[in-house]
Image (cartoon, rainbow over all chains, first blue to last red; front, top):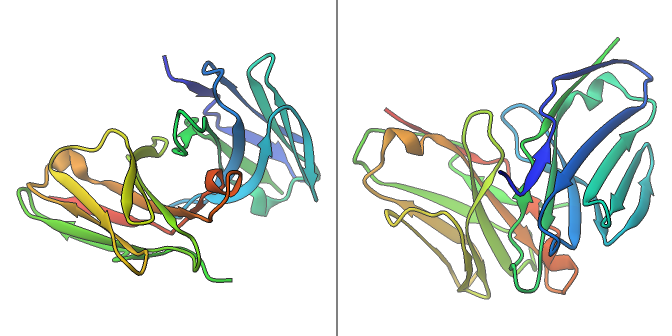
Length: 113
Length: 115
């Protein structure tokens, strides 16, 4: 079983919809949580990062971490066709786990006109 | 703003050949990470360097080696290439600091095709 589980989708939504992307994890040592957006054949682009439990908002994006449930979410409000991409959650477990990122498998999102 | 630069963008090699991938981190970033992403898969951590010393090692084959140079750029050397080495190879960098170390910025990747 993978340390980080993520629904691969694909997820198709109409423009303007609220999108919810989720990851669960099993390693309780994870402390830093990130969301990356990856367009086809491109490198992952950092969207959000959070430390510990709580919410963090940046424009149309909200990241949520619930360490007690080992569950993280990314919400996208007013989704746009340009949001169509694969969204990867990633986590790290310093100091003992180093700073390497453990990724989910990614959720493919398509926002349709 | 300057980003992580990787070269080459595309590389085609034959089995048993050698390949060298280069990574130039964001200025003032002192840590470099290498990841391998197979088709339809998530990136898998290979190796990282902090201040020119290896800091962590993941599932990197013995046929691969890497180093970080005095100007902080890094090279991933891959020998005796196999078909299964065909993948996207990403380099990421992070800046000094306890929190910042966990925030990694990725390059556009090198697509390696082994024929």
